[in-house]
Length: 171
Image 1 (cartoon, rainbow, N blue to C red):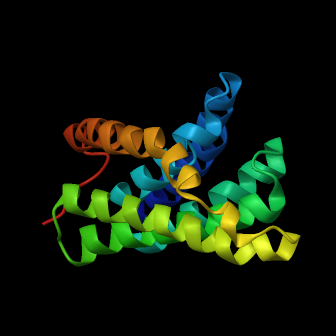
Image 2: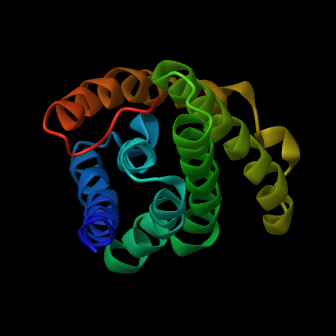
């Protein structure tokens, strides 16, 4: 029972962070570039086994959208929920179920996150009558600072979570 309570509490905490962290970044105009929503999603993926992490990946953008208006519900919150789902599943599944190295899991998850972003844009843009050509390298490179931030911050925070036994190392 204690593990279940801990998992539920962590899911709630990470969903709350999906609201709080983007607010802080957006206060300084850094939201889109630094991908703040994906920091708690990745942390959840390495802290909670993948069924719980998936809830954070899916619900985080929707809860943030409904409570703050960021991101706009459609198409962004919908798209980001799919990205969050893929990010959380890849990272958590590889880390907990396949016992793959943290760094490899993190790198693969971030790569899949960005690929999913492009695929979602390719699917969504035609719905708004926008040319698919607008998915350019610029969109992919614009988020590069966010990718670097994820690769730099998530390992630092995970070390703290491992040290205080909030999260368990794989393997």
